Image 1: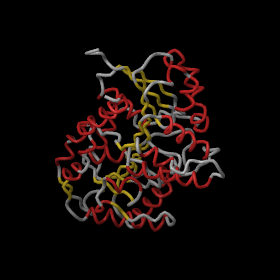
Image 2: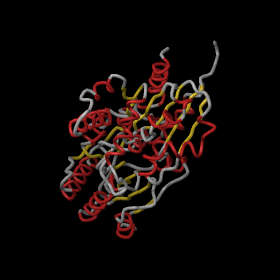
Image 3: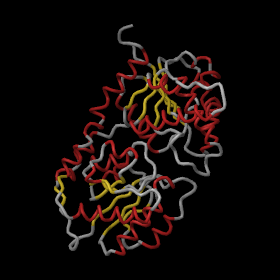
Length: 377
């Protein structure tokens, strides 16, 4: 039928910041598709990842029963169970998008059973027609984890499972808004005097343990001990349990703090990106790093550890030597790298240009191709 608009279903089982950012972009940029978007709030992690089929059925039974041409779900969705419980979904072509994978995610108190979370990821990948990862790092750690699990389980496993799944997988990052690459900050060279003005630092991550708040505290302490003039903006999504390091940072560095807390207004947030010199990461875990990418696109100079997904898109000149087992040594390394950056002129336009390939303008075609593949057209 010529001219018929596709009907797509998006399911987001743990609708945290980057997941919401991604699905909003999908709706906006693939606007020739009639989307139905069903999401669950980002709380009660263990229940959410294991019980989301019940929650979706409880909240959206009528929507799930509709006819769709295809569905696009996040890896938190228990796709295999949902397909088994909702007959109309069992025959709908499906793509699963991995913002993260539970094989690589650092263990925490919120995960009562790591194996259960891993199995949800694994069964969803098995049930999907196409698998998309947001980075090569995410893709590799998922399949490495799959192999390790198959080797560890007692019997009746699928030794070639990862190779089966790899054949239907691809990498398409979460895209960055096109307008960020046109930020006025991008046009200005970077000239920083250690004497005349403080360096404006941005730390824009979730306020959780895997983003390294204890490493951030150590780094800021090093800056203060070494009498480096700085301003710090600490912004990002917060959940019910906030690491205690943030209270200590707020009390110890009150004079240097310019912004502290979540910025709900997107325009205000983007304005802040355009005012900062350095975007800093202290993460011990990162599957893509959308917040860093946004800031770099807007002209901020990255200062990130030489690990995780950062190695895929940040030049070595803006990475500091990471020491996972020695946070204090890592803090010294990060400050040394910062001082090196501050001692030279940097072309912000070239730095922003490193990420042009991650803009919606560049990636929209890959998303359309993924939809075409799952529809076999």
